[in-house]
Amino acid sequence: MQITYSPADSALYRLNPFIKGLGTLFIILLFSVTMQGLFSLFFSLVLTILLAILFKVELKPILISIEKIWLLLLLVGIIQGFSTGNFNPESLLIAVIRIIGVFVTSGIFVTISSQSELMYFWEQSFRPLNLFGFQARELALVMVISVRFLPVILGELDRIRMAQMARGARFSHGVGLKAVKSLMPLLIPTLSLAIIRAEDLALAMEARGYCVSRQRTRYNHFSIGFFDIFVCGIMLGTILAYVLQIRF
Amino acid sequence: MILFDRVSYRYKENQETSFALEEVSFSLAQNQIIGFIGSNGCGKTTCARLIAGLLKPVSGKVTVCGIDTASEDAEIHRKVGIIFQNPDNQIVGTTVEEDIAFGLENLALPRDEMQRRIESVCRELRFEKFLKLPVSHLSGGQKQQLCIASILVMQPEWLIFDEPTSHLDPWARREFYQVIKHLIESRKVGIIMISQVPDDFDLFEEIHLFSKGRLLFTGKPEELKYREDLQPMFSFPEKWYLDRLQKEKNDQLS
Image 1 (cartoon, one colour):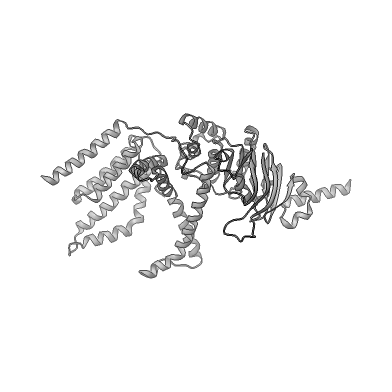
Image 2 (spheres, each protein chain N blue to C red):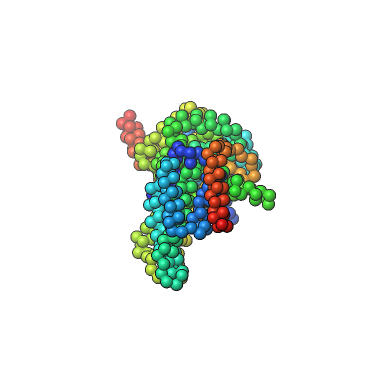
């Protein structure tokens, strides 16, 4: 089960894509940067999940995918657990909740944002680069297509892995450089397939009239509504409360 | 009308003398299904890409509806739509609607016109119910229909299919044939189909047989069926052998 756009009808889905992205960034910062305690972090995670359920976000693929990052959770948890010298289970749990929080929030953003919404978000984010001659819309398209093809490439990687294993390859032996070396038969064909796919896609886009320098119109138009302003208000309020809590 | 006038093409990575297409000349008239057949590497796909303006000939001239494809005229991409073998490699959007709109955004059309065209094509292909769906929810046959819809909204005069049925199951193949027949009746477009699948040959009204970058035969499938001299260059479908045997038997009897 892959995390991908899953349409539904709720206020969260109808948010302006830029506000959606900004909100995601805000929650990610809330999980990763702020100095919250274990209870506060756990509460934030539960609240994020409850809000997602309330706004009809399909959480199952996101929660199932947490399993895929268990090694990262374990490693970071152990390192954080021993960060003060003696083993501290609270530090371990804090680190694990922080990572799960960032993962779930990013997953929710991908689930509620269609390609045109993602593109709009990146385009608005890259807009200041226009001053330096970068074309924000083209850069945004590159980002979005990369995201769109990630599951396809992962599927390809899995197929190659199985094909290599059927011929007796083993990918999980050795440590350090040896481990990296054992992954080469997997990475090189995947990379070459990704390049072939990219060439095919470029050709297909050109055949559909895409040209970097040419003027394009937009099918989806996004406006700012009451709920967008409300979400911005909540974000500003939270930042203000956090700053006040640190100062006093 | 498509005109090939002594067209040669060589891929950059190949040796200077190794041509993917060599001195090929032919003309194609609209409102029919034309088949490009031949073994692997014979030049059929190169030919299709030259028609679509995706490749420029090394020598000679390709003209589509009066436009030289070597000129950087964007109109060529509107006149000729090409659908590649693997739908996954040409779908840009995450939802059906977004993918169909991609080509129209490139044509810089206003939103109302885009919506009108998308609705009309989806109605024609009975694809309305999929419009809001993520592309990942579609089957192989549906993804191919999406690729067809994405091209049809651009209202092309020519449609090129590069081995469209090679990855489809028999049922999806039958549906695809129905779509093709419908298109030729309703839209009066010219259809070029590159294929090596014998089932597809029954659809063709005109066949172009390629071998080693050269055009060996142009004509009706019925004529090709009885050209025994061309058999070493291309393995004819079994059904054609049977038809020929049947004809010989009938001739003897009569």
